[in-house]
Image 1: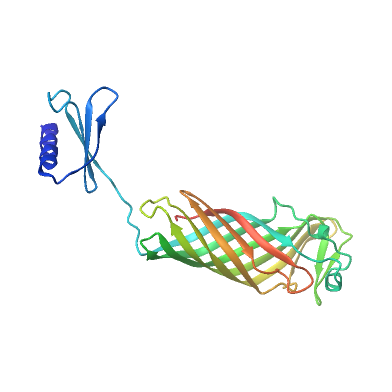
Image 2: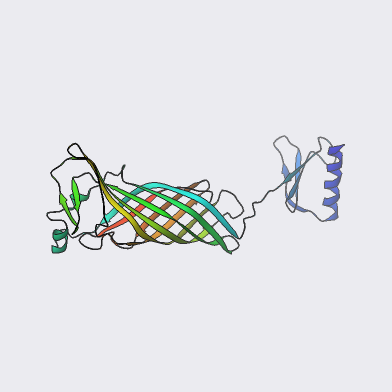
Length: 276
């Protein structure tokens, strides 16, 4: 009875001209198949309408995700690696005064150990044009850790970098920033929960903590908190790629992390754990 009712409803809608026929074809079993679409409802007829043999009607509904004009994503985690582009002229007088006897090999990093972890309190997305073009912004902290392979040591008052005679099993410079990103987001699939798109823009970060952590057999664990003549502000170009449930991020600073002596431009890349 249910199938007959659906068949009658489908035929009436078809004959009244209210329906839009999308496709007509034959299945692999030799039965004819008609597809009728009415808004978000799709009616599929199987069988031979002339003889009535094997006649069946299927009703499907298309479900669309309707994003809001303003959406908020709370507590986003980034996990990636940290590095820097070393553009320092080590033969310059300024560099040799800041780090006497230094070469680029002094600042080699353990790439698997030099990490970037970001914790965003929130990110918000504002619809600009049909949910395809959006404004994306947020607030959070960036935690950059540079793990050196050598035994360099930061001295303070004044800041100076030396090559120590002690063998350190761990030698890390950590820089922490409070950061505000501002990006233009392009969402190519606005009616899907798992989106495909990208975001590009810039971020401004303020250095609120920096320290060097050393571990050696002679002195155990040592930790020195100082600004080490680091730039208090970090302005970076930022980008994000959304590949359905997988999200990748990257950043590249516009200037050196140091105010003088060294020209080392930091950059990061990794995986973003977020809802969108």
